[in-house]
Length: 470
Ligand code: BGP
Image (cartoon, rainbow, N blue to C red; front, side, top):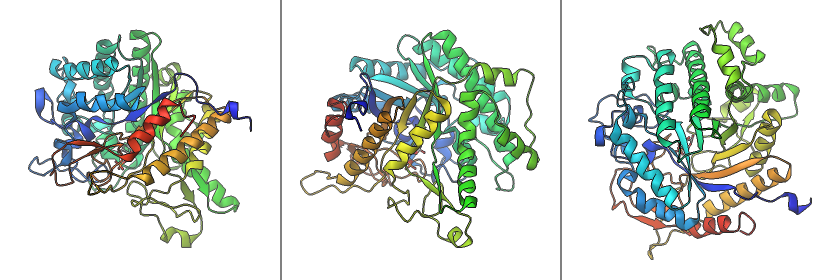
């Protein structure tokens, strides 16, 4: 291969990604309301506990709310070009349905963004990342209620109007497809019998599609030249064997994910999904004008997270040997090793997914999450030798570079959790992703001081050489 084609473009957005509830803390400060994360004691897959007596690591997280200057200085030292973060809905609209935003909440993000710009780091905003006001769950039933579209549109417009001169990159919903797997975290949905119900889930998805299209519309009007993307958890699936049925099972599994980006990027419901709804007797309530809205305001780029790949098999014996994945258990791939949490490590899968998404949509891609969750050990001399993390990221960055060589347009790469933060699926601090170690444990004990891991200098060099020499 001609190595010149395998080159990261000038201005490639290297950096890191976080979510408000996983690092900010200060969950009751400056007028913030209670969010669904604040009542998710065991992570995103578990049911909520509306009692505040329950200890919850998200309440204080790593106290980024007060330490952001120190943390951003460390990101700047690594040479970050971009920092992806989410806006906590409840800092701006504590119950979700207020008409006027909370100025103190806006001020926090204003200050934080100024700090990023001071260091020449491009802010990348996720408007909604796995949390919403508890008020919208209790009083409206979450995203199955169409009124949420209006509340979200208000949130998005408030953000665009306030940050229009400072922020160009946005994405509408984090891992929108995870609504299928974690409907409370993705959509504030609760089910009376505790059983997931696809009718509510897909109705909620329709409302999120509308909300996303309205945000794209408003963003383009308020900020000419802004880039507003979707964000999916990519879940590339391989057939276990070359048996045609396995191949079809893999395709069907992938469509569960791609359905979301199909609607947001192609602007219409794909026939395979409309037929699925008919088969399952799922009736999506739509209003006049909904389909035009989706068609007229598609996303500018495809944002996605990539951690692992999946396998589909029709063989009964494979159904019993699931991986230990905490978000989604799947069939084991005999060719891959897995992380301690059962996430199957597959760098080549990243190249595959980049090619698939680009072939399908012909829009720029933005890899906005990737990383290894691992337990780190602090050595006696205070160092953290996280070679396993370097190995994981190194292999994935090489495959991203191969994808660029294949002709895929990639805007940037923000690795997940550049500073240790609370895990979304397990609500603990044992599972760490950072280049920066935070001295805090899952019981909330520790100094909360920050220390550089071995991977800190490694990533700094990746960025300094624009991915040429690492
Ligand atoms: C993604 C989420 C993030 C993040 C990451 C790692 O699904 O968008 O919020 O947490 O996964 O997951 P975990 O924290 O469960 O290891």
